[in-house]
Length: 265
Image 1 (spheres, one colour):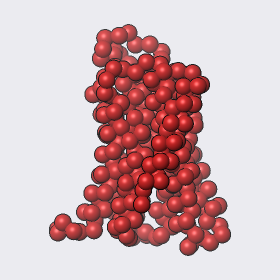
Image 2 (cartoon, helix red, strand yellow):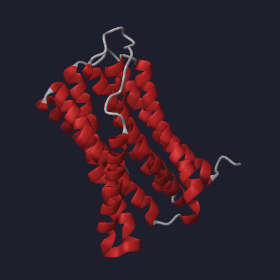
Image 3 (cartoon, helix red, strand yellow):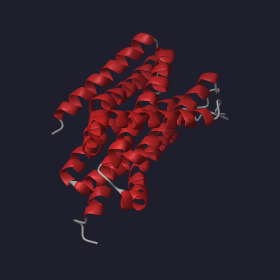
């Protein structure tokens, strides 16, 4: 198969976007284990990035993609996809165990109730982000097949917001286990979901691929990202380091994402 094969190009871009999640995990395991304020700042930052990119980039992109097929109903259809994403995450959260048992921490410290809460937060966040990376990977893949320039810009945008997603997974896992290896492993696992979603989506959905399908998937991705941020990351950040530190982290994340989006072509 020649290197210029469009399928390989599309798959390569989804791998690139997924690797950015690992980069977020690397940032989370550098240096000492964060204290309460550092934890709150990191979780708030990740939440701010995910909320801002959802409302400033993904939702408008999804709505524009639905206009051709649904006209003035595009906003309503986008909302249906958004709520489907919210509902899918809440359903998964409901069926996950309320308590994650930890036998021991890698650093030898005693396991506390807070450690168990942090581990559940990391697990829930990993599942939610992995779930949203699946359709995100396919949407990037499909866009690249349609127009490589659009796919490249989309992959770069996804990579930018995947970095704090890796951070959002790795920070609580490291806090709970004291293990850099486990924190990075969970972040990497969520990143792998991006190219996996591209391949599975291509094999299963290619025969019925329409212009509207990637846009609906993007709307669902936005719903998942917003509910993770509002329902999980921001409350955990406030509990860890207080409302002001959590708010500061969220605002830093939002400003950083706004600047990043303005720098994209």
